[in-house]
Image 1 (cartoon, one colour):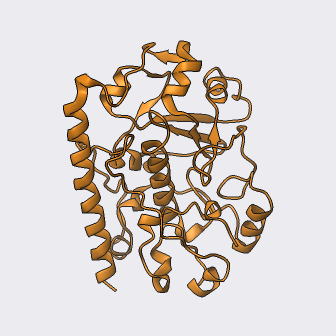
Image 2: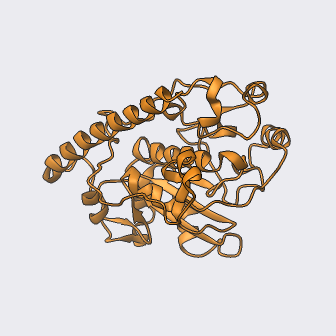
Length: 291
């Protein structure tokens, strides 16, 4: 059976019945019956963050995800918010060939075009590719510049955590709206994106899956093409990295999410996270009602 990783499934967004599976972020340009013959969707994972130790994404961001190019009225009706995103060329025209390739070799990146560039380890999340703090340090120090075009380090912690110490060059993206802006920017081959939070146990993995789900949705007509086919999770999160590579942190400090001075900030972010989650569920419910 095809593993969930081959389609990078993000189950709480995969709530549309198989009969209209072309609306799923991981849908393909083939007929639904053909696709169902090679995969069984798993809808048990609940990606939306709850009241756990390392979850919750604030939504007090003012970034608006709007189309950047004019389109015909007909096309506007068919496409959603992601229509303004930058699309990559189609990688492979035979979906079954890609599925076979990914089944035979787990080291291929998500679009099946090549092998992973960075060495990976077995982390807490079997559906994601994880790297060690040492590997990330090597990336920051330029040891992989000859094999990757660029890299992004996405820190999914809250701003007070980020300001209290972060990996050199990291971008603080703890909001779903902010993550979506990545899909609007130009992309290139051999670029990697590395996610993390405090422990890489909740916020980082969930944000990674969210970006992949929207990437699949954006490129559903060109499956398995992706804007970001090579993404990693930092094993152990910022805490592990700071313990091993403090000289690559700015400032050289570590402020935990449960810091006593920021209990009110934490409460506020979690409340807003629940509000955003409810809004997303209503949006998808309305989409279902149109059919």
